Structure formats: structure tokens, C-alpha cells
Image (cartoon, rainbow, N blue to C red; front, side, top):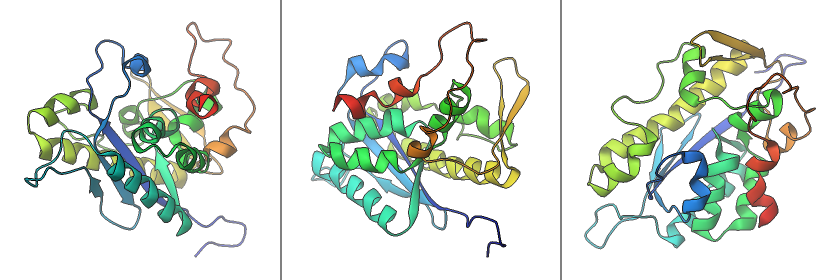
Length: 244
């Protein structure tokens, strides 16, 4: 129970997808390779175990890609859980996961609504600092073990195509668990911490916890004059909402 003056902790539902198409070179250019397709996804409520999503063949095996009806069912589930009081939680979901899901499910308007009202920790950081941080580096910054070993997200399409379904599903399930752990640890400490490219630990105050995309957009623009290369911009992250 929250004390007077304290906010009631959010009930989160973490969400993450793995895409079907391999993106050669710089993954930041993924939009030039779309449609990427979705091989699987995971959702995890802060009070439950992960729920895994993928389509199946007539033989009962995982399909090469999620079908449009199955992707639309995932969108419907996210919307339903929002109506039940859960806040959807992602790492870079506003820029990537919801963009891909909107295309694969043909549910653009519904995905826009969910994306605006969900917490994308990476987007919060972009609005606060002018640049993003990898989930692994955020986990290390707060002393968490990080992602599942043995693979990276970029390997998921190849492993899935080779029939390594359990390995990919374990990976995506760990991602949503990790997102929940990072969110909770940062809110408990009232700061966001990460390991920089130079290997040192850095931190920023997070006195009021994580902001939704809508709330983060209202933050003042950060000072990025010190940056030698252009960081991520709010506009770039949410371009799919505007263009659609």
C-alpha cells in the first residue's frame, strides 16, 4: 500500500517481438528491408510468467511467420490488458516493435493508441538525454545479469528458420523478464543507470519513475550540443505514427 504522497506502483505488462527477416549490416536501416515479419513475441505481466506468441503449422509446429490474424490477436490482447489496468512496457517499442506489429497486424490505429500510452524506457531516455542505451547495458548498470547467453536478437531469424524454436522463445521470454526487472529496479532506486561505451557506470535521476510515450513527449528537449554524432530524435522514433 502506498504511503500518503507516494504513487501506487504500476502493474506492467512487458512486450517484445522477434522479427523474421535478416537485416544485413546496420540494423538501424531496418525500415529499408520491410516487411520484416514476426516469428514470435512474448508478453509478461509483472505478476505472472511470460506468455509466448507464434503461429503454428497444420502439423502443430511453429510457423515461419506469425499470420495476420494471430498478430491482430496479440494487438487485441495488449489492448485488453491495458483496459484491465496494466501499463504496457517495452525497450524501444515505440520506434520498433509497435511499428512492425502495426504493419503485420493491419491494426495501425490500435497500435498507435497503445504505443502512445505505454512506457518505452528507451524512448524516455531519448527524450531525457538525446540518445538511447541498450537493454543489456542498462541491466549491467543496475547490477542485473542481463540477457540470456548464447545468442543475440540478430540471430533469431536464422535460428528460427533452422528449427531452433526453443532457443529463440527462451531468448524473447528472458527479454521481457529483463525489461520488467530493469523497470522495477530503476523505479526503486529512483535513478536510471547504465554502462557507457567506455565501460564506466553513469546514472541519471528518475525521481518520478518511467514516463509513458505521451508523457515523455512533454519533457523539455535535452542539451545535445556536446554530442559529436547525431543521436536519436523523438521525431525519428515516432515517424511511423505520423506517416501512417
